[in-house]
Length: 512
Image (cartoon, rainbow, N blue to C red; front, top):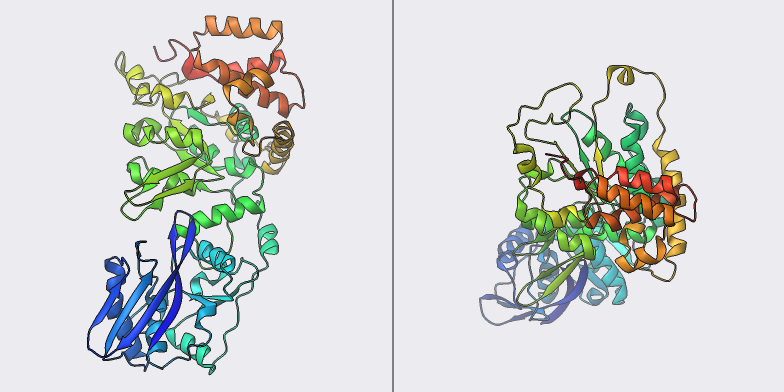
């Protein structure tokens, strides 16, 4: 008897429906074809044990399982439940009439219970697109799949539940999630707030500018000055995720298996902080079975690289293309996958190996030339993509012990949202542009015009401070953002002066 069940394969953040054909004929062997990997081939042993332990039988005849389309590689253990359901139907233990209306996915334990799968959300989206009535999957993944409307999502704990459902001996309740309610209830629900940071008003201002224009930023200062504390609070002042951004971010986290069972949507901007020992593949994505890297998990959020010079140079260099194109392309011999990676880069570093160069109180003990050597670990092309260079100085005792209330993230976020709205209106005819940091050199010339006095100031600053040529466009972009925050149509002298102030690492002799 031939029976068809349906599963799904995830490539990038998109899913492809897989037809699993099970045929039982005379003979004794078990065959699985259709380009399965080792985990799929091993499913026989998991399925056999699960069926026996749940009171069902594994046919002692020839079982042929074909996974179509046969030219797409099938990876992972998520097809266990799809194949097992097909085997039970082909052997007459399940009524096969309604099988073709459901996508069925899940990894089987030996006792018949189900383990969570990766990529439930993109699979559910594709199932709805392909006209399936429902999606049967492990209970742990039910909430993330249930945010897809017009699709019945059934979370099951055991293969017994699936058999009972198709045979009509038990009833499964579909998982229901009110997507919009879920989204708006936990929007901007951050654990940390800028009001917890004492002092550092200059750094808070720099991060406000970075958030308003989507600019990348690097914080340079001694240990304990508050670089990490400030960076961790940056997502709390970014504009709230839109529902589209939330779904896109959730898809990436779903594919990576990073969503908890209680989560249906990612409703706050991601903050990723990988350790400096991270490999190139873990940072950018890829591997033998391609998976999203840290820069894709930070999509629509913040990627924080603490102690930037300690990262491997090769890992930092592979970030250059994603920073420009805002996506990662991973190519293999037979396929290519794209992962979105539109993130804000926030980096921090000590000014020298000992950490106390330019410290107001402690003396640097690094030998001559060591500071420049330490800074040269960061390549020029990478530094070229960082708009704001901010020197962080330690907070003194009087500021730390002060009872004066600092400004809350919510108030800063309101100003950032207003500035972003101005930019959205400015780039209205360009849906791919959302912030000033994404402007091309030609757009900078057209939209960041400055008067004669501004040209004179910028010329003097570049000559006196020894600013490099690459700093010119960056200063104009940042000054445009500062003007937007001030609600000004023109870039004024004070906006330019503040932007020039945030180009520390471009000054000749800064580390000399």
